[in-house]
Length: 220
Image 1 (tube, rainbow, N blue to C red):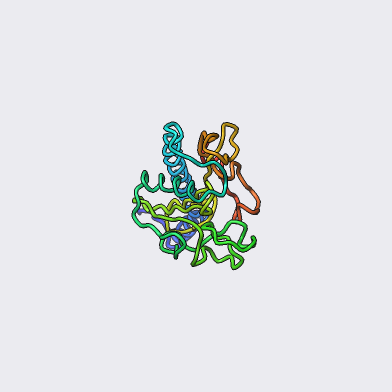
Image 2: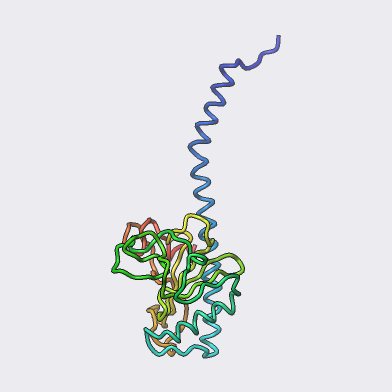
């Protein structure tokens, strides 16, 4: 006489498998998404670094101080040329076509501003009117300046796709001197660094939804 599993035993086994799956699958999905975010961040950093290092070497940049609109135009124009524009949002116009409303640095609680990072008292993301430049490149990434006259640049590495959060798929870069300090003049330009060159593990101005691995994701 052949022995087999009873219906009760099969149901118990299926139930155990379901419990194990429910416990492990969300973690696997989270780890997979994190690897994707990390890879996209590294790629964006590598590309913007190569673009500016070449320009610095060839002395193509002319900034002499912070607050220089022409210098920001020059620097962001370099990005547009090298990354190739799929869609551009006009200066001082509506930018939702390039940078979707989403996570904000400082949680929207900063002084009233119109930066492409979503700083606004409403805390709802990018306002309709802005003082920045934005474009989408041919790989679907969204790029914006922080302000029309500074050397700070934002990227959303997967464009309009979720989660649209800083430290996940949104990151910030600036141009630094030899000591890794943000440089105000092109004569001191040496490299691109994350604007926040450290990991943030608790909520603060630059990381509303921690953790934000601004530094270690580039090193690991």
